[in-house]
Length: 277
Ligand code: ATR
Image (cartoon, helix red, strand yellow):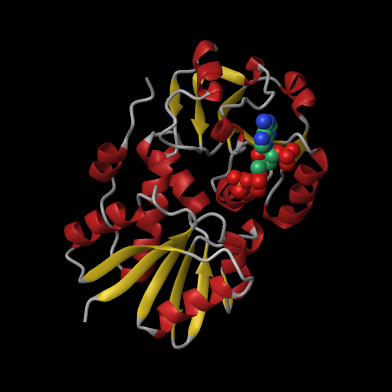
């Protein structure tokens, strides 16, 4: 029987996951189907019931997107350390009646930066903007990539400080507010993990953080030249990128986790890329 997978979110019409996993399955010749499910927002327990029904019907795994990443976290029987620190889950595997949960967003981001953009993070100065779910997912994979320093800036500085305290033994993370950035000089890589771009806003980041030979990365994808990327480009930053590569790479991680086969990503990224200008 064809193995069943799905992505669950609400709304879900915009999702690229069925296309991405369909292309992966074709390329690696896996007998699987991948659909999109609009998850119920109410009542409270309806999401978990929908997931369990999918698993009971023989479903093998699911991706989870907004607004369910926290609910998926809460209902999991087992979680990876990455998922624990992110406080959010974007992939689940159903095995022997148990739900095993992962978060591949951060690892997909690191792979896109290091492999696809060709920018190893080791020894580099890295600035992460934002301290919400997206930023939290990136922290452990970023620290594992051994940057010279990792700074996290957020409007609500207490939230950034809490995160720095939580990562603790995994590596040094310096938390600050946007007003402190001017004094911290230039960074080789600046990643916008705030949700500001979704509403066309710019986090209050000073242009002094960018270095011309460095890179600026926008987690949102398909939004073309966001105010953040425009600021970076105007500061002369050589490499600017949006999150299309991250989207495809996190999918590849999940696919490998489910199927034990790593799909090639380059052609899929090219197919989904919306030119920045
Ligand atoms: P997500 O899951 O996308 O990360 P979230 O958990 O709601 O969403 O977090 C949103 C992040 O974007 C937060 O870091 C938020 O900053 P605050 O914690 O200070 O609110 C940040 N953010 C949203 N809009 C922003 C803006 N216009 N400027 C700067 N930061 C913004």
